Image (tube, rainbow, N blue to C red):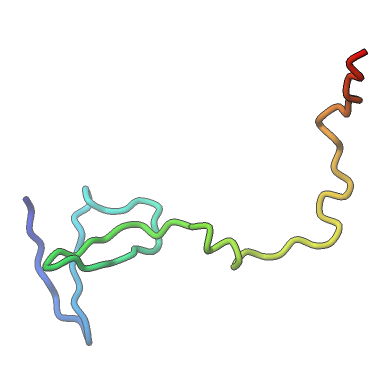
Length: 77
């Protein structure tokens, strides 16, 4: 187990993650406390974030080609 120093920073505390424990390509971390343990994990989009995405316009996919051939059902005769 490794240790890092805690730095008092304004109204909070800061730690420096060692390079080999850094989150590559992550801009935001979720933080939660379970007892005396603090857990950091990358923020990932969820289905709840879908409502925050830009809405599609009214003509979205109107000119899309059908990629599935329409076949009449067999009459069974």
